[in-house]
Length: 78
Ligand SMILES: [Zn+2]
Ligand SMILES: [Zn+2]
Image 1 (tube, rainbow, N blue to C red):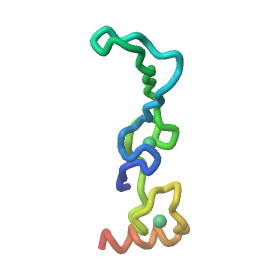
Image 2: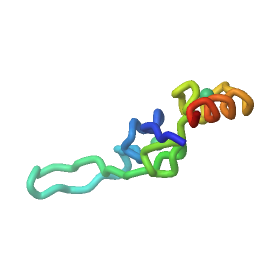
Image 3: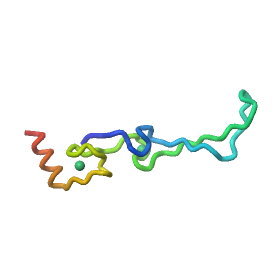
Image 4: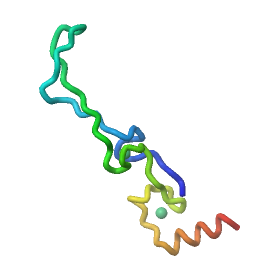
């Protein structure tokens, strides 16, 4: 099973959410928005997802049937 970079987070595994109350940064001398790392739900924070060997799309987008995938796997191993 091939792995592909997650299409949701582009391989980062998380999103940066800016906002919230922010904090006072002494070096900048003003308030900066707080940044929160939110794990990507599509890949559970891994940054990559299982891909289909047959059509090269992620398992989530794959439209191949079990038969097609089985056939491709069999041909590949010949
Ligand atoms: Zn992701
Ligand atoms: Zn497929």
